[in-house]
Image (tube, rainbow, N blue to C red):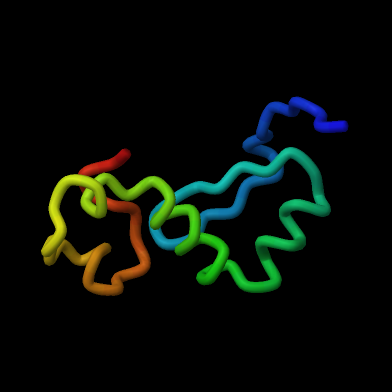
Length: 72
């Protein structure tokens, strides 16, 4: 069974210029085991460049740990 939760800023982590909110301490702890890899997965999932510009050379698409400047 899946539970709907609201993320909490009190359980947030700032990483790579982005604030990541978490619903529970366990989720935050999993993120903190490897924040760059987990954060990069989030950035990549919310990248609009991949769907609109095949050869994008923005810093996100060339490997910088940061949100996609075009958003999703």
